[in-house]
Image (cartoon, rainbow, N blue to C red; front, side):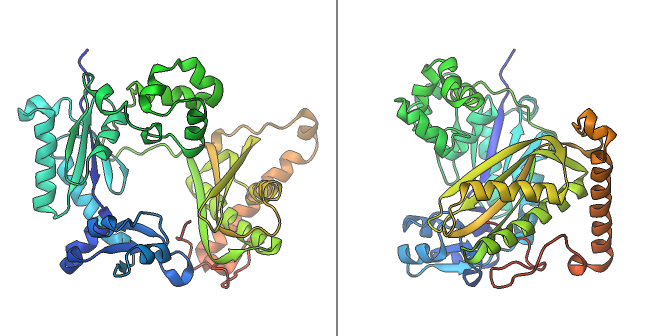
Length: 413
């Protein structure tokens, strides 16, 4: 069977490029898109090439970016503009194939296996035509990776930027990708990379040439997955454009206006975040089994912990109790917290969630109590929809001093 032909098209410096469409003068100065420094969400989310030359990086704080580049110009994010441009870019992709799967607002996978003979093009020619059309018709640039699987296509688009095409084949992937540090492998996180490096695995090739059993032994399922990716073993299909992706987790995060130190403030923040997560689960008709909390320190390092409940839930009080327990176990009192995220994963449709209640509980009041709590939270949600978000809450209190309020739910860490 012939290989698939997968493209990964990645818009270069997307948010910054979109801003330059409406303000061309920004093309000639170092600029970055960042949040509001006064609310402590002043983190760089995109920068142009001129700012990049000064060493400005995505996730730099505004303060750090100014130190690197004193003349940098900051503009606030405008997500409606970015969505509008994203739709135009994907519309071009859809002229070539129905298999267009947006991976985020600025990147998409395309399966062009059947499109190539129809358009009488090679894969590189089609990728180059996409780059030329996006540049000419929209005014931004993209980089395109071409390969036989999604993982290598994505790594190809990252390999050379901006405005470039990289073709990774079965004949050349060892030459192109294997010399790269293992940290460049898709989904190789910091903790996994440290464990791999500690065992002498420095490059993607080192991992690929190792035994899959060894990778699994010290990294579990993730180790075997990374080994497969290093060897180009990835059969995940590209979805049809518009096909809904399976929701794998629901989370909500917040960067606070100042560092949180007291247990009371941290509890207030957790209750707020959990309330948002529980609302999202209910609205989507989902329940989850795994609760996670990520704490971001002022030095921008993170600590993440999770626990499995043993049953599925969308109850605010249950998620809250678990999240608070996680923080108490892994946070040292007095340590400052810059941001937090609460998430729920291992999701199933609410109607399919089989509650694992013991026989003793079934003849007692646990099942009835669970049902009452669910109905209570459903009533609360109905009142919010009718009278507004602030009409009624489940233990949540506004705290404008640290940036918690119903009017500003969209900021994240």
